[in-house]
Each structure stands twice: as structure tokens, then as C-alpha cells.
Image (cartoon, rainbow over all chains, first blue to last red):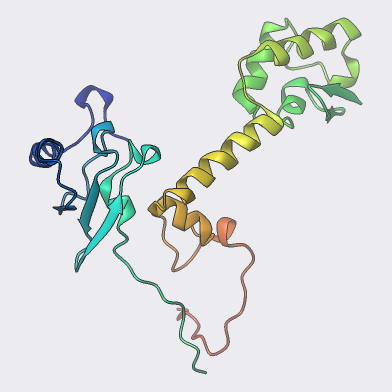
Length: 87
Length: 128
């Protein structure tokens, strides 16, 4: 089931703060985050995030098309390399 | 044979059923269209329609805001491609031809994965 519209998009306030700080400082360091469930807002376009995948941080540059998706969608948590070949 | 909205050919089915052979029109929309055209839902088959009734239906389909046939297929395709382009999880699932919405894949998921292919050396599930 999708989230109620009444509630608005889910986004962690801490992450929003990080983003606005990023814009203010003008740095281009990736923003390290564990907030996989937070929705990507328009002001995050152009920001590089380092999204935690459970083990390491995956760097993702946010583009316009990604707005409305969750950060976690771009940092896969599983690493499937194919089935074994032995008989 | 009757042609509604391009190449869609209906036959001796009930109007409501025949309309669903148009991609993008399901039972609900088909019923709505028939009702609005003032056709007795339960009895008239496509071959019994008069020309004027048929043209009313054509008009209703064309005038409705529904995206149908090629346009709809293109729209869906573009949406899927967008998911792939942004490298989202859903895009990857589409690429791998696996279910996108978190369904199990240990068994089932045959619609998406196609016909079963036998894997050599794979143990059968225990049967009781």
C-alpha cells in the first residue's frame, strides 16, 4: 500500500538539514547517509549522496528523474552474481 | 467485424466484452462506454449493433480521455525505461525479468519469468 498523501513525503529532518547545509557551504563532498527510506526532494538534485547499503556507502548523483523515489532504491543491498556452475 | 479506434476488431461477443480487446480498456471502462451509449448491456452483441450505435461507441472511445493502444504501450515502455535509466531497484528488476514489487521468486513468478526451464542437478522439492 502506498503512503497516505495526507502525511506528505517521508523525509528525515536531519537529512534535509544536511542538504541545506551542503548548499550553503558549496562543498561537493558526498553526503553520507543511512536514510534509505527518505524520499528524494527537488532540492537534492545535483547532490551526491553516499547511501549505505548495509556494508559500504554507494555514491549516487541525484538527477531530476530521481525525484519522488527513495534514496535506498539506488543502493542495492544484494549482490547477485549468478548461479553456481558446478554439476 | 467492426473496427473501433484504429485496428481493433470485435466479433460476436457482447459489446462490453468486445471492447476490452482494446488495449487500455478493461471491463470497467467498457461497461461505462456501453452504458453511456445507451445500449442494453446484457443482450446486444457487436454484430447486432446498428451503424449509428457503432459510431456512437467509436465516438465515446475516441472522445474519452483514456490513453489506449499504441500510446499507452509507449507510455508504459517509457516509464520502464526511465526506471532503468536512473538505475533504480525497480529498473534493475525489469532488466532481470524478475518481479518488481517484492514478490517471492523461490517459487512462482512464472508470468514474469516465462516457462520453467529444467536445471540439471537441482533437487526436487520434497513431496509429502
